[in-house]
Length: 211
Image 1 (cartoon, helix red, strand yellow):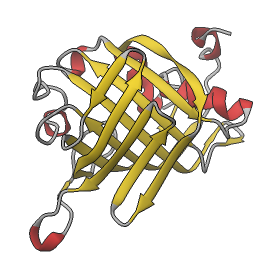
Image 2 (cartoon, helix red, strand yellow):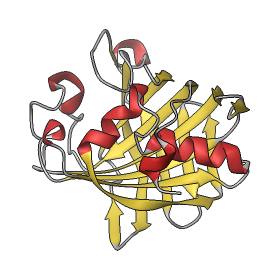
Image 3 (cartoon, rainbow, N blue to C red):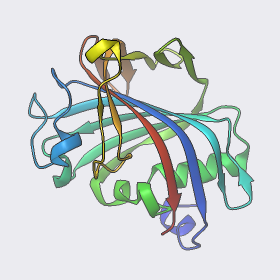
């Protein structure tokens, strides 16, 4: 069944959890505060992201406890589209959960992630994978086999407390913790990226759809 066919029936969904992202920006990603009106520091964006779903559902299907990995490539300004994306869905997901997560992260389910349907011009594909999202101290780690191997940590601010950009209109969530990657390795779809020491973000997410 095609994604367009699956999208004809709108299904209520929700996800609460945490998202981490590491990109090739040399300093904190300007997209967070400029909302895509400022170009990435390198003129283009290459990124991986991990989502830990603490609680959530797609219709009647429970998707809590699952993890998702993403690879994103944006040729310039975030809001101008022409993104490329790939998704890695937790291999523990049931068939119904897998289908629901595919709809959510392709934008077909509308709502918070509906922008993917508008901005992504090439969906590189989705596959089941061993997606591990773990936390040790203040470090968050995403492991998707040999495809994505990443770890991010908050950048310490005054008195060692996290630096948080608050009250934004950023699509992921209003409060973004400034972070950096201690490891940022991607080997997927012909991409060979290493973003150790580059910009990273940590965000508590509360997403829903289709409205």
